[in-house]
Figure 1 (cartoon, rainbow, N blue to C red):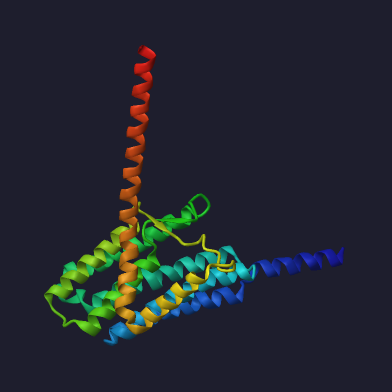
Figure 2 (figure 1 turned 90 degrees about the vertical axis):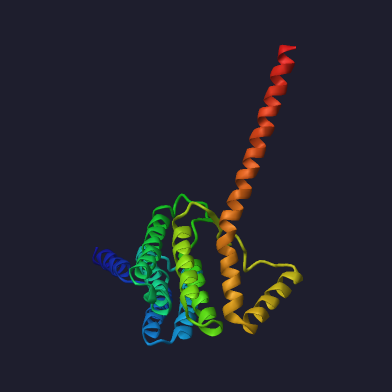
Length: 265
């Protein structure tokens, strides 16, 4: 009886504790997002943009590490969601505000707030649909991808363009659009169906090598083009799906009309 009570106490202790390894990655991602804000406040915008991309990498690793080590937990899921809001909701908007939107007065900080609020709503919707949503697709642009667009734009603008009203206006439009895409119902491929442990054709490995070379050659431009293209893929894919459905409906109606005419004859 005493042994049974001791085992029960040990189980309760394990339940009350948290898994260290995946939460370390989450904490590191949160730190990278926080550092991005500090760097932007000091005028180091390139470092701020790179920090957001580092947060993206760490955010992608924590979930995989948890699944590989069988250390998933409700605490980890909630902590990851809060860290995502800080790193991909608050940090990108403040970095963008410091870089370009602060010169636009009230309109600038309102645009930054739209992005932050959209990221919060996107994460809340995602958390409530985890058990029912199709894992192969995201509903709305994922917050890390939206943050990547903002970070890449800051990086490109800081390296290649002079600050001014035109650049500020472009930054405002992209910030608001990225926020609205997060709240949209456009479907985005999640790429979760890719089996990294399975065998792939040799050509696939060559493509990955070319991608690494391109990113290394000019990281800000390549990353901006990639994530901006991904952001456009949602509306484009939705338009094609709507056209296919309309074509199927027309075909179905025409077949039904032919059948009705044949039955009348």
